[in-house]
Length: 142
Image 1 (tube, rainbow, N blue to C red):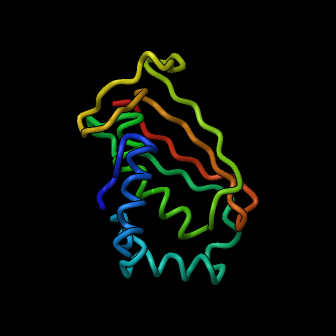
Image 2 (cartoon, rainbow, N blue to C red):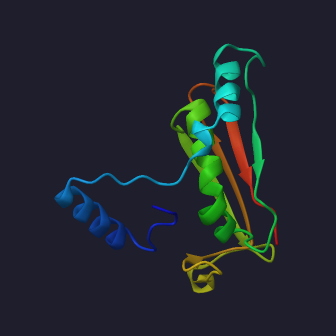
């Protein structure tokens, strides 16, 4: 499936139930981890080629899909890579802003993709077990 696969948890549950009923698997199009370049990076990280990883910063694509839309449509690939390289996160702390102010529920809007989004800027930090440090995702404002 392409992502985002749904807008709501209820829709996702319905898809999962239908797949389970048919004995089908659901696969999200996170293909970077299967390409030779990204696999080589993982091997170098595992062998300690770059030493102890202290911090990784990832920025959004910096196109019209800023903030929440960038995170949902494009940022999932970056999250998948961080999990591929470093394992599942131990914690996440995030801040969503619109025009410099914290976003409220009333500011959720329909994005360019068929999804609901919020914010023009998102800053998120994650701690991963392999590093004991944090990695960050910083989509830039559109």
